Length: 596
Image (tube, rainbow, N blue to C red; front, side, top):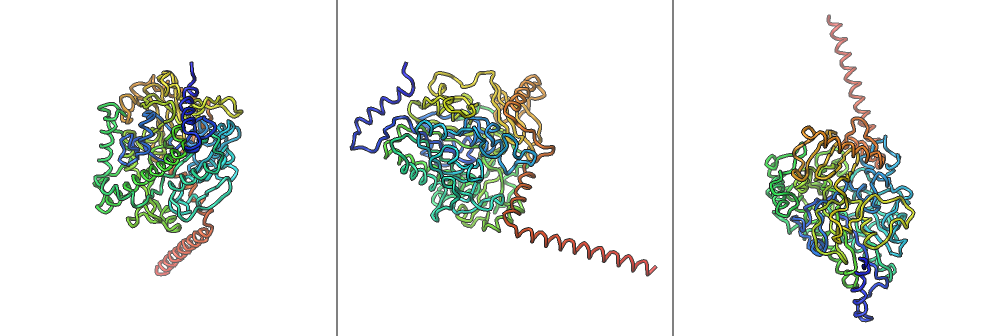
């Protein structure tokens, strides 16, 4: 019986013979190329192929010629998802169990919590380069901040990588007070950005440039982790203009619209209840007219930023077609987690940073240079529909995200069986017929999805096999139709809950009291998972918002030492006021005693 690879090679050998010397350059090594496109904070239904409002024709085209996954889960935060995507291992086994911004001091430096890929952890780039692939990446890394933790130390021949969780999309500057600047590295050397910079365009330009500079006779692996649509949400005006008025009806209307679409598209069962809302949700009508216009405009920029990313992905596709490489390229498109709920208008620390960095959150030049765009928790909840909640939490809105796989040998199809972000790397290796045991790194924990894609299996997981994720106390475990989940403060309460996702994909009805046997089974499975991968318990009273504020405050003072003088002056003035008040009270008491 022919292998998948041997079946795929025949047509490409024939094409090469027909094209001959007169056609575009065709790589000598006929093994498929691999392109992984990772969007940032994109919800399950954000791409057009999944029913979203943004125009994403290039991503939709890939979905139409390949596999569109509907029950794929990532982690609730970016760094762990990126580590799992590139290594095929649970994040706790990679050294990137969470993100440094929310890391408590009790976990710093512990195994699995080094905040950089640990020794023995191999990336896809490591494995593919060892098999003769050229390897390039451009975009957000966020798996270590030191020069020797950048992509060139993990298998990439060429790389232009952002060490931070995000950065400005127009300028060479930080987007939050945790980072003093935007730490971009080229091949491990800290560098700066060109003046004519927009993140999505630059990422594609750089990838194309690197491919031109590397050996064209070899197949390539290109990793493009975009900044879209992470905060600050920014986009060229020509894209923003296309969405004028699209979101004027508000987040409740979008939430209901996506819920209806999800049922029509078969993402959830007909009649499934609308997803649960996180505490603190504001009603659209409770906002002033001015704020409603402002928030609608922010969502317009969000859609525009997504379309701009897709536009530049289209440029990469056109380039590969011109080079004769497109048909022999595996494309994987995904997101690292659900939509971002953070606001930029409700924090004194963020407001101080905006003044220091020259940002604004107002309507002027919305989405342009200097604009610090965001959508906030209500739009995030609407975008995350049909899932509950959003990024940071292991609710469905935080971890159920899109996955598209297209390439030679994969028929157009919809995949409804479960898949995890750890499954991507082993699937690529299986697709390329590379045995992961050939490399001497730590073993992968993910499963190959190729048997599902080829029709040889209905699922990569057996009916009794559990799947789990955990990031900073926010946890989920799946077993059959059931899921348990736990969310930490400030939005969560740390209590485990049980849901039947086949009936209740929006996690509206907790079954822990009515089905205690199932609950205990899943809790036992989670306990075994946590022990197996080395999950550390969160400190007593842990609150992710308090922790990120504490960590950010410390970094802010470190980044801007002169603030110590300002704070010292404020404290001195406060002490002087207290001293004067005490003196005044004592004088009044003496006068009263004298009068008596």
